[in-house]
Length: 538
Image 1 (cartoon, rainbow, N blue to C red):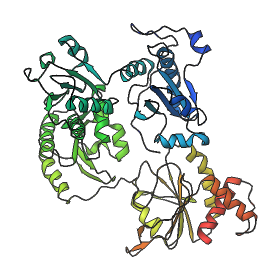
Image 2 (tube, rainbow, N blue to C red; image 1 turned 135 degrees about the vertical axis):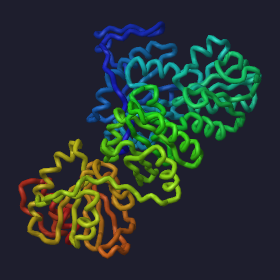
Image 3 (cartoon, rainbow, N blue to C red; image 1 turned 90 degrees about the vertical axis):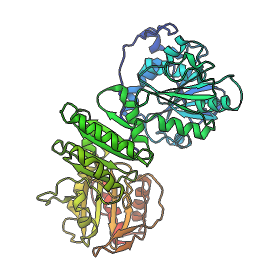
């Protein structure tokens, strides 16, 4: 499952106090009635088709984030039920097999996923608002209203435009015509990400030329030049303008929550991502920031985005990239395909020539790897990025390797099973059972399709690869891998197995289609052993 940006959840008291239009609801009332509507494959289309505006959460019962969201979502639903008109909040258990088709239709790739559905479900937008009750209510009230608010006075502008967020205003001599319609279409399309307004008088706006009569689009932002004007009213051109103008030349990653939306945009960008990490409190921070900004301006529009991160706020990034504080100041560039390039312990004057060398293809790729174990005598062999080629492809043996995450509950349950299987094969010189911490080591994505944990991959000589635990149905494909001599060889087949497929294999063993079932007391181990024999000795 795709990895998502972390969202902070806050738990509130049972009683909700809302401003002006909020309704006060007692704990007893909230507990006696569920305001979140439960949908499934039997009633989804019928109910959604009758709603001009409805919000649907796709969740899984085992998901911790879903459990944290649930009470806030319910409180928000209770308040919004009294809105004029009422706003309906609903939920779908996307973990249920019968609802998987709905999850696929709405591109649910993680939990919880919240969608805003408009016009009877004909238009779907990602929910990108807060996850606390008050924030959900405020965000959905805006989303249920007009996509663009009319600005009729300086006071209107002051209440909408501030110095901490992006705000987009269209200035028009009249609220009709192609330009106004295209601006409204843009506002409708991007309303979940940005706030929009329109006015007939630029004098109401806090910055920019006040004598313009339009049509013109003015984007206000809390960084760089503070505002920028645009006059191409094709919807695609407008959207590109908004996306490019709303990302700082250098994104700042620190503890200031006002910067977090721009950090999210930075990491969601398809560009290569240059990240400079240093201690902001150090006296050398200023010259680094100055030189780094010069380089960012030089490469603007050339497919590379720039971020500068404070060491104190960047511990998660350091863990992800396998970095250490003694490498600071450092710069790392990650391409969209996951390839990384690193320069540690750099000086301000190193930045420009190193980025140029990267652009010219002269910087070798950086590979994150745990240290090679000094001893590796356990039945399950430990593989790290620096030993992956030697152990998995150059050993001349059949290999079963588990890609795992230390925090993964399923991986922890699998560990003793994998240990038992490894003991069973300990005297087989042709087999290696191994594991690799996929959070601490880089994995070649063109060779291993690891999208969840645990993933078990069996590699049979001559390099016939089978994914044993994944979610897709069996399929055939071809890839290249490096042989022991370093020459590319062709993988014959990659097949994918779910629990159902493993059960099918067990049934084939039972009816004699394969070798007899091993007489072992543990069913999971039995299944895994049978599958290994199928992979290695068929």
